[in-house]
Length: 347
Image (tube, rainbow, N blue to C red; front, side, top):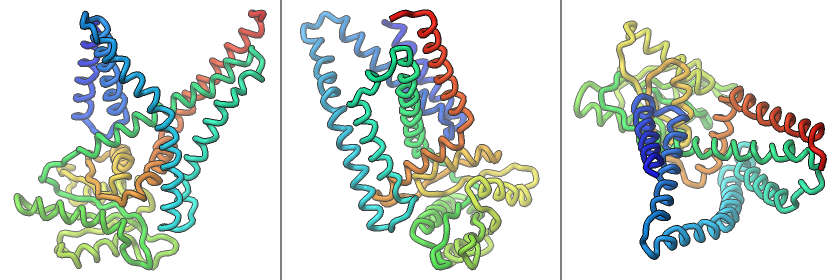
């Protein structure tokens, strides 16, 4: 029993070490979740082995609550996703990018119905391993989603020191060549940090990173810089990076600008973006060779669920080679089991 508690403590220490070393890692979510799960398992074993007469009730009540919560929670999740889709489309318009919570809700309904139909009874017993691989893959992505969400939440607690040389503001598109509210929140977050640092030491330079879209008459960087100057930031403390077209280029091209100003590479930097985009932007910063950590601006709650679905899809795409290897391995193993069953087992 004690080894379970020791293992839980070890996992938590590994999490602390990993998070301290770099909070922009998916493994942080895995280590944290694993430590919590193993600690709960330790508590269950501890309660079951005590001589306290009502100890079993300490396990029974949470178990019953969980059994009740899962079906009702699933229904509430689907209803919430569909309602959010309706609200988002009403406020933001009918766009494919605004339909992700709708598609997720419909996808969950399809999975529930598929599970109720129990199609496995119509499949040859030799093909059962191959059929079951679908559920294994679904479980794999459920665990991955849980790890992603935990890593995302943990990253929100990141608090950079007020000793930065640069702040990178990530662009997100203009509306009528002006700064829309979503982008303004990113700039305001940078402005807020700028003034907080200015109170204690030399203020940082703010790099506005964003190129010119095909439907825009000027670059995002120019519009963002203009907005910041209008809100009190001295022009000499602003810089433009006006060539990037995506988040990775935001980071890579901003790094070039900082390296030009500080050729020795001895500088501190952070980036600002919306909170839903914070973790993925951190992954791109690491990929671009930056040590920069991020600070996020608040997002309207109705916009957040759809944005998080989009972020998760982007994270999966970013790590697609790894996922393809896992899926291929599961399918190959399932196929081998099916072939073995067909050749050597007579039902």
